[in-house]
Length: 140
Length: 130
Image (cartoon, rainbow over all chains, first blue to last red):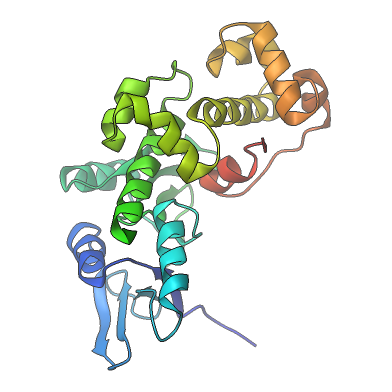
């Protein structure tokens, strides 16, 4: 049966702006950026981990009607689309400080939880992101 | 037109995030309006158009969600929790809690079970309905 999650997807409103944020600010790397004619296949991943990619997809025709794309964009910007990511970090507070200096918009400061320390932010479009410093770090 | 709606939504979401953070403080419409780049006079109306409820109601539900969390996860007194989450009096707290949750804080506490999922999910999914 299955042995890994390799790709998942979130909607972004602008792929260049998404790159600026996910790569320029969050420090992910581009794993694929391909103009397929009908769409731009744009994925990012944690540096050194191309085995798990996030597709930054722009809603629009022909995958969906312009009317539907408009609804998707509305939901994303209301924070109601459901796209979200949780990253792992070795040092939540240090990462928080670094990203804060880069102008990242945080929704929650680093907080002690039963499972570790984590905090919350949003991407420029409204998608939720968290990163966690777990009490027990997973094996690389 | 579309861009305007998206920009408005995103700015109102920023203001709602600020409410989520400062839930225990009085509703500061002036500050929220500044975050959302709308006039104070338009803030409540725009918030309602985007999220389907008034900022005041959203804040009540956010506070009640926090109170539910504290009732579930701590042994603190109901009065203590009432002030901790931003209500001004135990009477208002009990009335609002019962109206939103359908049970009194004490009844809720008795029946509650802990939730073990990421924080933002607990926050969104345990925020009681209108």
